[in-house]
Image 1 (tube, rainbow, N blue to C red):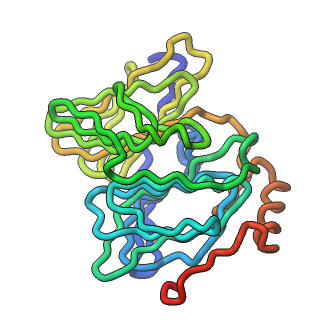
Image 2 (tube, rainbow, N blue to C red):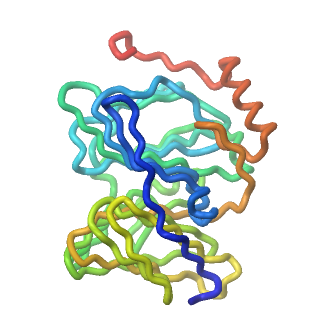
Length: 295
């Protein structure tokens, strides 16, 4: 095993439900011993009705990626003035920086949101930057295809395919939404100094990193870190499926910074955390004005 590559244990998502309209597989960074850095949290969720009241974020990017099999739109509102649908197959990246307020909810009849909600940590140097949003429609997301393999490159790059909107993100980040058919294999290069989380959305998955092998069942994930002290530019993460498999890869440069978090706030110190909470209480993170019919 490459001494600069580390692989976590296999972690099963924690089942979480809120009311009758929301259920999720929930993962937190502490379950992976820091190896999923800069990802702080992942929810693989299903939502059929409004669940969350308008709420603040600070110190992170709150990322919503809609799977293509979702039915109807997930409608976004934020205190920056953005308002619009997140369609099946789309990506919405809310770089909260020093703080803003938002909510997302399905609207209309027979809606079924099937999506990822990802908290991507911001480096200390950008935690107090002005908030902004990046949106990519389904047709703007490129794909990598080969025999038995289809991978949507929702952000970042893989196998020579790059998502152009990645340049607008606060930090480099790769989000892959992939499908493998029986006996197919897919390889993704993890750059030096980066970490990755590999999650089996459905079906089983074999993950090989150098000589380390893990098997993921549906709803399970691992994290991989390739140390910045390595001499190689990248290490291959190879995925193989015995049957049909749907997976995601989340990957970015590891920050190696202290984390102080409370719900939707993720800062570096307790003092910063309390500062952002007080700023929200004073109304400094902006006001979210929703149409009367949506309140």
